[in-house]
Amino acid sequence: MSRLILPRQGIAPSRRAVLAGGAAVFAMAAAPRARAAEPKKGGEFRLVATGNTSDSHDPATWGTSGIINIGLWGAVYNNLTEVAPSGEVIGELAESFEPSADAKTWTFRLRDGIRFHGGQTLEAADVAASINHHRGEATTSSAKGIVAPIADVRTPDAQTVVFELHQGNADFPFILTDYHLVIGKQDEGRIDWQTPNGTGGYTFVSHDPGVRMVLERNPDYWKDGRAHFDRVELISIRDPAARMNALVTGEVDAISSVDIKSMSLLGRAPEIEVMETPGTQHYTFPMWCDTAPFDDVNVRQALKLGLDREAMLQTILQGHGSVGRDSPITPANRFFDPELAVPTYDPEKAKALLKKAGHDRLAVDLSAADAAFAGAVDAATLFQESASAAGIDLNVIREPDDGYWSNVWLKKPFCACYWAGRPTEDWMFSQVYASDSQWNDAHWKNARFDSLLLEARAELDQDKRAEMYGEMQRIVATDGGTIIPLYANYVDARNTRIATGEEVSTANALDGWKCIERWWVA
Image (cartoon, rainbow, N blue to C red; front, side):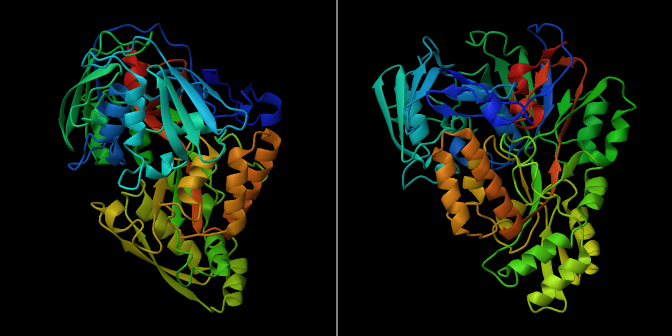
């Protein structure tokens, strides 16, 4: 089968699961929109996306750069699979994919006749080389953990790729949608990533790292009804006010991560449409569970109870989101547990827990910068104010925005952080919450959680999976070292001269980072 249908948010998996070769998988719901006019070719699209002077074209290095993620992943290259706006995982370069009965072996059949921008034909060897670029002991790829479940990649013929996994994984097609796992053209097993040569709807023209990237439409793109703009320019503007001003004055056509505090300004511009969709992104405050005082679960719970989440939701997001439940699984995820308790501000209970941990009052440092998420410093200050009544003295350290992710996150024991979330529970939990995860930013370890993670990954009974993921969410919320105060909606804005489809993906900002491929000039 080449696509796996997924249940809409709020509908029990047992009622809507569609089995594919014994493996049932689900995805996030997309945000329905009013029907747009039929797409047409032509015109220019100017998009604001963050960029870094250190940006590289090697997908093993991709991370926080919007220019790279939206421009190269979302337009120049393709993956084997993709998450469609409807929320289903479908074949992209793969015409079909099918698991074995135990979901340990997945066979992908490539589409015929797809060509790279350089004129070469796509073959199975290109897929194998692209995925293997992130595998092995020697690789330094950021996606090393993502592809770790792959035991072997075989190419029985030029159109077939077979993945052997260490363990059954019902969600494996989702893994291959990751933005690192684009497919490039190999030459003797290696790929020249520096000169982008993809199969996507746009060809690479130029890139000034940290400043802008220019793309042009691929007239021979193999996807019907996609890639409409003649020319695309991605421009890096980091200052929120400058981004908003560029949109209002018509210098650019679309921006992501609208400054919530200044949203009212957009209401005065009738040609601007704000696009808001619930998704999986969430704001966090991870604390190291192997470092005092966070090594005591009573302290961790006291900090969680000492946070006024509702005040933070209204102040930081102005209601554009929902209260976080100290679990990274949001209402947009398929196995979200709506019965998971919503934490309430309870300073008296927090004080009692601190006493149980041997503290009359607790003093801790909290590092924050708005590079973590928009309003992170203000959020830390709000936390400081509410925690004081709970007997907790938070010393907010305002860190520089520049270098925050390399100098603070994973380096300081208590800090502000942001996650875009992942399409599947296993993916999110495996990357950040498993004991051996390379991004376990809370240094948290829980044997029961780790055991459930392995069981749920290979389980094909969807009711059992739902029970397991529900228990895992409860374990993370009560024992985990990550405070998750907010689930934030994606809030983007565009000029109405740019049209979108009737459904916009909730997989990420800007139509799941696929706006360049999916949108057009109205």
